Length: 334
Ligand code: EPU
Image (cartoon, rainbow, N blue to C red; front, side, top):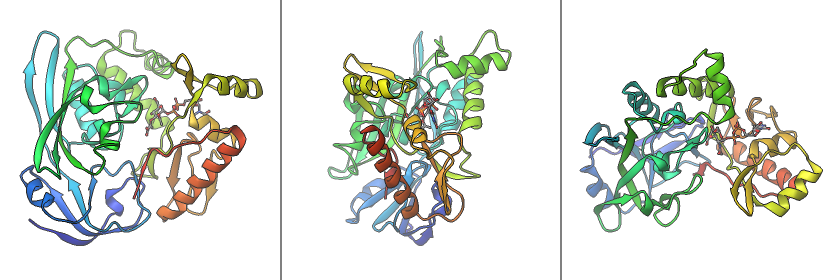
């Protein structure tokens, strides 16, 4: 197996941060995992590199996931089941399913990253989370040197959460995911912006393809293209707070948006909180807060990972001071 040394990671992370991997192995076939697992060094996996902030040169082994393949494994009256290798580009999978008229992940078009990251953080957008389409996840467990398959229930999915970010963090290498895609799609256009965009597109009878296109249009208009401006999508999670705290805040800030979570809690958009603290469009040297979406931190050129980390710390502090809410970073910090 080839180990490459001192490999620049700038092209491999969507923030475009300059860093170097001391040792990098490209994983092309699952059979490599037994040998890699026997190596004692700590392991860091990069898929699309779209949810990491590099604040240092990673030591140990950086594993570049390039496992490829989309395979139909089952079909019944309602669903088609696709087993997809974890190194496939997520958006390519979405387009593949949409072209066949299959429903389930059309609202998740244009989310950067690879298939392996989709169960890891239960990716979501425009009223849909991937957990509702995932049938199972297969992974190699480093410690017991075996493949395991977990059902969706085993994965303990939550908002941007799964067992892979907790109990199994750094313990496994996700190799493939089985998605259950509907042959009779039920479209989810209830998220306001989608309805509006479909109208702008003059679509009267939406399909999975036109919904995906509407999502692509909305995302392209609000979120920076990582090929142009380095970023990792939402930098923070939307915090969930107790109703009582929300009511107090609403009395002071009547326009605060919210989404119900449980009878006792609501989610409030971090982008709104950050904007209210005056950060939207803020620039400090080579990094800043996106002018159209305050939840997204951007690298305008040669920002260091530590510059972005510092900016995020300052944002956390000001949101805490103004609203008494502690934001949590969504990106993985290396
Ligand atoms: N808002 C502001 N100012 C901002 C940004 C947002 O006031 O700068 C307000 C909006 O007006 C709206 C609310 O916040 O009332 C929600 O904004 P938006 O619909 O843009 O979504 P979000 O909650 O900021 C989440 C996801 C995104 C996903 C969008 C659309 C998280 C952490 N982020 O953002 O996911 O695309 O919803 O569904 O849940 C990602 O995870 O990388 C990501 C981009």
